[in-house]
Length: 168
Image 1: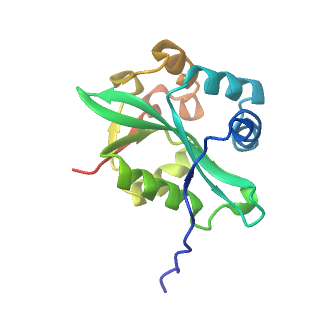
Image 2: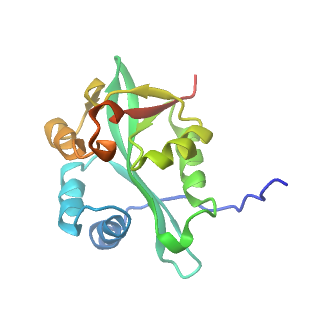
């Protein structure tokens, strides 16, 4: 039996209060990084966009950053801090955010936050692979590469990779 897909409205978040106060707290709830670390990331990637989904009470419950980059001489969008608050997971919100990105961008990459998320991203069309060092970021290149160096799954260098969606 196929699961019915719920429609969610994806919104680009421009409200500075949400960006500077709500987004870092949500990220902290989903990842090991501190609120201060996420605030610094937000300060360093001024040209990024944040897309999100709100619940019926207008609380931000799922979001992701889209950062400009380049891969093999072509533009690419890097998705960072894709997260959904725990009680809202497995209901299609992140799939809706990824679908929105796939409709609007030709090439997208991201680092799955955990090994078990690789299958989720694969189901969503992220089937290519590359190394983080192959991506050139347009904003704060060295800061982003240093920030992302956390990303070894279980400390294994050979597992440190990005997955890519390519519309073409």
